[in-house]
Length: 267
Image 1 (cartoon, rainbow, N blue to C red):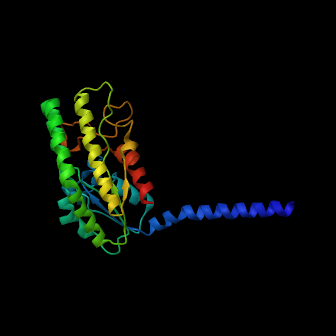
Image 2 (image 1 turned 120 degrees about the vertical axis):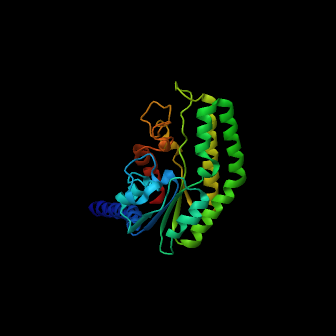
Image 3 (image 1 turned 90 degrees about the horizontal axis):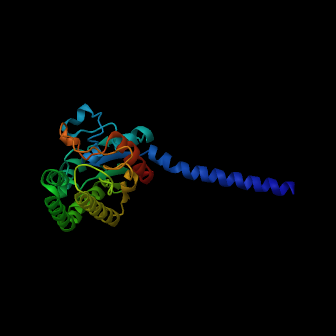
């Protein structure tokens, strides 16, 4: 009986050790990564403050999810070339050169500027529900028609330059909680904006997975922290004194929303 208990204990310890080693592997792998972050203002960290001087108008923040990952996981190397205002075309033309055959982890958030996030929000704020809905509908047509091809150019470029890297494509948060007491846009406008953002995310996810990339979906993480929610807001509302931060994640949105989702997917 004693021998049986000892054998059971030994097997349990072996299993526990195996599980510990198994969970340690991703952390060890991450520590050896050569990580490059690509993308637009949601990847550079516009709205999160603490911008690095070298980044200039690209506004790369030390509070952005790529920088938080680098600070916490400490990969072997880290480079962010994410830039405010980036489109799929500018990522291809100015950012993909940061990749190489030794790059082992890539993150990318892009696509929103290609369908006109900023101009849509301007229309919705200034011109009311009817024109807001029309603007979003037009952007959704553009997203369906053009975005798969535009994203495909980015993703194929990543594959050709960093063939061995694991690639995490990171999406966008839905801006509004609906059916709450909230000043400003109508519920119809808010729901339509959310619908448009979700369509963009779904197209991004579909294209990413078709290239064998991982998709980090941040929509659920922001629930309860959206504009018009009752919790701490993780997105800036319209800010007329600093218009560029409007509808971008705060530092808390990057650390509480983007970063944990990205880390769980990236390893």
